[in-house]
Length: 374
Image 1 (spheres, rainbow, N blue to C red):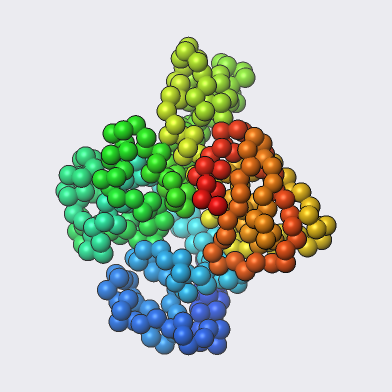
Image 2 (cartoon, rainbow, N blue to C red):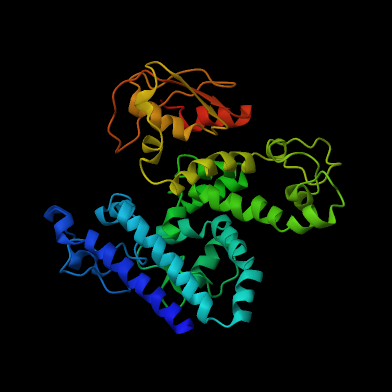
């Protein structure tokens, strides 16, 4: 029966690929979306876009471009469904054929991946590679700039190896690019204000940094928290950082004189947390917040309270769509104003007011960083 299962998975993969190609076919797209194959050919190590199609699926080898029609089409509902099928079927097939011990190794030794992701982000390697351009940079030159010992960059296809030991960013790693220069970032690092790196970004570098730092370290202590329980009231985070202060107070620098373990003394982690929350918006399909609730059923001038709303990213999208005034309301403790969201057509003006409720320091970050120019 195993061969039958594997062939069924193979069929799922093939059918899903057919579904994606059908959406990208000429019948679904206007001629003006057709890219120039010759112009893009140099960016691809894998085969370039097929000239028989107006659009090819975005290549892993090229940097992510949110304005690329091919990239935008990946959010088409049928494409999303097909991608999910491919990922699930490919994962099950790999697990089914791989030696069981290797699967256990992948799971048990997976800690290396977030460790490497943290080093990749903290060493600002993505910014170095972006500055190097499409020709990439040799590992020895990368080492000279960021101080990390040279060697083979081990990746899960997150960085493209263009030639032996020469690397450049690709569709995945380019999402982590803050757009800042490496020299700027190093200067902020010397000045003790590295949090500036994450300002005015998509939040994804901050998200990777947060997940592979305090959250990754906390996850390692699940067993201590739930089985050994030498400190019954401590969550995994408390064991990781040897503190009885809660996560959010700790982020904000509480912990006093250090008697409760590792004290968070700088602003990096709390500022990074705020930006990381905006980075999580990539989880949502475009327009999901507009389609998930019938906002037009609310009375005109309704007050919408975003509890635990972070820096107010979601409320800003709604305010821009439904309010001519920008949805300016009160918040706890301060009130962010809302600005436009590129690419979203404004809906009927319903005069909504928005209240963002979160910890004071988080709301303050929202007003200062996200809406200060509104």
